[in-house]
Image 1 (tube, rainbow, N blue to C red):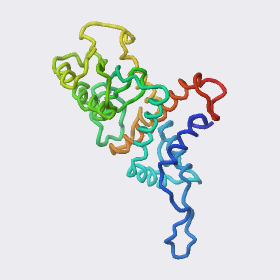
Image 2: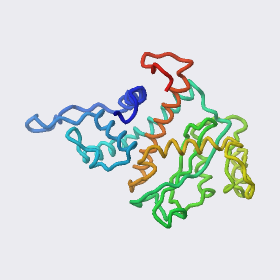
Image 3: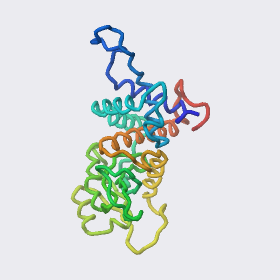
Length: 280
């Protein structure tokens, strides 16, 4: 069974391949001209999707077609080229052009996941008996499309990550005249309101001590997006130690979520030759 359906992997791969530089099949500098052929980029890309979805080790996913060393080497090469970040950006631009990002409504919230291997963005978890954990402060639009995240140790409070998270809105300028930021009760403080007002944002913050259903505001969209991201087991239980690698996997997951939402929402209004026969 494929890790993702073909109607999703094919457009992802076509755009990803367009971002890659051309490489010869064999190394032209080899003295005998008979060096072992380079492993196909498509094979490595499929391996990275499997790693992201299943969360297994590089050795477990390696086989006769591609070794664990090749997967890591090609991953680092693509990170240096900024391919993962560029793929996520192009997916957002395509979604905004076809469906439209809901930029006047923003939701921000934190999510703690496990990080058994520790690393640069791990810390002692306050909700998991002091084990190593990873916190991400995620931001989504009014529908739940991921628009960025800030990574930190799980011992960091959500409110301390709010400023760098909302600063990511600068990548989507110009913004509507009035942008509302939906936050839960842990952000209920005067410093949060001052921070938002200084950036020209309006906050809709749940009040401490008052219980309210999560769907009482648009904050539930960010909770749903956290669930979408946690469906990729490499993000829900992260063994990567370097922050740049964690960010690369998040960029790939966000691109998948964005393209999937784009196909689902455009299915009833657009036609294309690879359109699924039934609504995904």
